[in-house]
Length: 395
Image 1 (cartoon, one colour):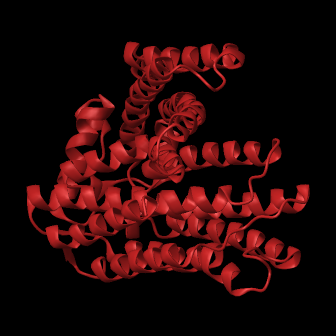
Image 2 (cartoon, helix red, strand yellow):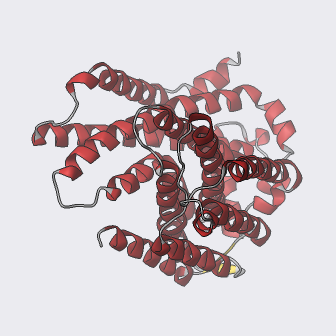
């Protein structure tokens, strides 16, 4: 193994974050029988704050590895590693919940709805706002962005709108469910193939500020001599980059996954504490789902905000739009197939108000990102939609 690559990846900070995260998971697992509700209010609050703090520590570790991977490999590859890692682990946990005891007919729908509103409105709005306030109008790669939008329109329609139009209680009949699940996975697989191997240039930075930021971060992040780094305009094919830096890339992917797993597991413990706490208040219980989704995607959120601050607008789009495409493409087939295998009813149809919010979100996304350059005013409507979504939770 390349000793230099190993020492570059396994730093004191990265190892400390891994240890903190996994120790916290082990402690909570070992004391689960003693931490069941009802807990005293003070203890509940202390546990909740401790779990959130540890999640934050681990999340910054995930962000560090994701940024170094993105700057070593270039976009969209680096962003894909972070996105797919988080989404797959979240899908595994949702699947585990469905396979466990209890009624979980709407878990897939509720999870994806919360992620949709957070990623496509709160995170996109905040990141674009910060980027355009700092640098002024910024351009993006319209071909890649339009590809994301096309995928999202059909995926969200299949997930939430069409089931509500069928006379089947908001769910799909078995034959249709299998077709939708397999078709969704096949479409996403082909999308990934085109994105990674045939059209990677459509997901690369085009604005001079974003390209310069990517180049600067690449120089500082990979900690290699100047001659070992390729500027964005001279980026080698991903196959050559991987062959040249195989050890470092694989180690960083491994560290990222090992660091992100505690984030998602701890979020599930946080869910139990939140449910207990919210049940003692007049706050809506649906608020817990939103907070959990926000915590699970915290590494992605931090990375997108930092990309916006750096002026890397296309990377913001790759992270946010790509995250939702991956979430829908993996989560909906998973819950449909598990529902069929276990005989559970999987309700996907959304409420009328949430369908309207999804439609408005996609209309804003398509309209705003058709513009050759984005400004502050393209960000504000997304933040307004998220505000309406939160208000409806309390209505």
